Amino acid sequence: MAENQVMENSAVDFIREIVKTDLAAGKNDGKIVTRFPPEPNGYIHIGHSKAICLDFGIAKEFGGKCNLRFDDTNPTKEDTEYVESIIGDVKWLGWEPANIFYASDYFEKMYECAVELIRRGLAYVCELSPEEWDESYRGNLVTPGKESPYRNRSVEENLDLFERMKNGEFSDGAKVLRAKIDMASTNINMRDPVIYRIRRVSHFRHGDKWCIYPMYDFAHPLEDAFEGVTHSLCTLEFEIHRPLYDWVLDSLGYPVDHRPRQIEFSRLNLTYTVMSKRKLLQLVKEHYVSGWDDPRMPTVCGMRRRGVPASALRKLNQLVGITKFDGLTDVALLEHCIREELNATAPRFMAVLDPLEVEIINYPAGGIEDLEALNNPENPADGGRKLKFGKKLFIERSDFMLEPPKGYYRLSVGKEVRLRYGYFLKCENAVLDADGNVVKLECTIDLASRGGNSPDGRKVKGTIHWVNAETAVPAEIRLYDRLFTVEQPGADGVDFLTQLNPDSFRTTTGYLEPALAQIPAGTSVQFERTGYFSADRDGSPEKPVFNRTVSLKDSWSKQQKK
Image (cartoon, rainbow, N blue to C red):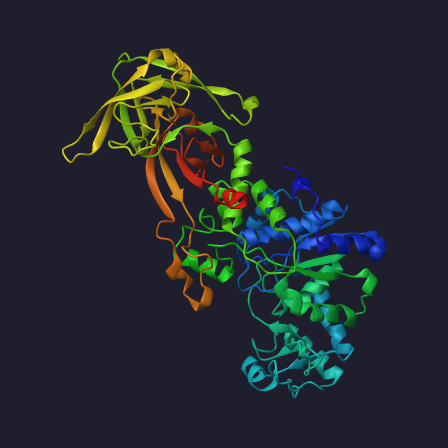
């Protein structure tokens, strides 16, 4: 899957127009460099896929490059496990980073930049506790802040204290380094924000080398500048942080025409989904799901395990587009994209998930024959396969009714249907148990209708799928559905855990064509008339396991036709 397939077609949006204008003006010497900068403190989710497609897509479309950079400035929650998963997910989505960088590799340079701000009288060491700062100095949206009593220390004293902070002479929280900006600013982020704090936590890449760590708002513009990033694309919540981003670069002398430009865009939010890392972590830690890659999770690894093709996520992001307005995307649009992609690529097989036995009373005992089937009617070039047909079959229990309503075209006593790729089948008798439940059907076939062809021109409206009971392979079928019962879980202060869907996961034993037992984990297929499924890694040829990716019903497509 080539990286230039992102967004599938060239897109037009305000960010691309900005890039075109900057190129025409000769900014950054005509170079385009973007970056995707995840924090390695969790698994990335479908919301991140929008940023990935945009960052890498912009670079590809304008002949530039996109780096993958891990913002590992907070060692308390970061881990190599997350780094490896993010690299794998980015590549699975169809992208190859130009470089893989780590913010922590710039710690020495960032420290030097902080020292330079102190020398310029633009940073100072403060000893107020977070509580004291918030209660008495920070102010609020209507009240200006108040200057710290340590704000006017001399440059020499600040340099000495900051070096001693680095050398580990002070306890955690005893001192911080603040930028000296404007305590009366209407933007609270500009009221002398903390840019370094003491934190004695071992870093997953650098061990105990550092005991002070830069804050994200200080580190981010510097990382972008060090790497020559031209367009730093962020989601809308960072818009209020942009003045600080620019202040850092201005204060350190980066010229406007040769430095990063931060541009914000709206996030991808889906109905029936939560995107908060905190909430996703809670789902995992409290065992509401089986892990980060649970197929109900909106994580990229979860969607991958569920069988969602990467091309469907790219298509979704193309359709959603890039705007400045936060919105809520109907999850039905994602499901529509999945169906469209799998309809063109997934081979068809027959599987029965709720089996009802059928005995063909006019077929010879022990008899068996091969029938021809297409692997994908949407693409005849995919070829065909052989289906084993015999005296005993399984059909879906829902394809038979003892007392059918008017307009019912499936099987009932005395009625006839077409078996997919097989024969015309007529039910002669339904065998009931002592409780009146149907346990078996006794049927006949029209031997002249092999391949589903009418021998005498008669019309048969219903076609049902089946498997040969003698050769079918039993399998665990995992039926996944939406994780939540409401469109916006947790809205209006409601505990999102109370809105979990109790039917989001159930299992059943189905019977499959034998060929399905041999396909590799991760392979997506269509179970005819049922939905799209993916072979799970938990399965084996002896006991396959399949996850339902999505049903065949497309509510989004129907909405668009209204």
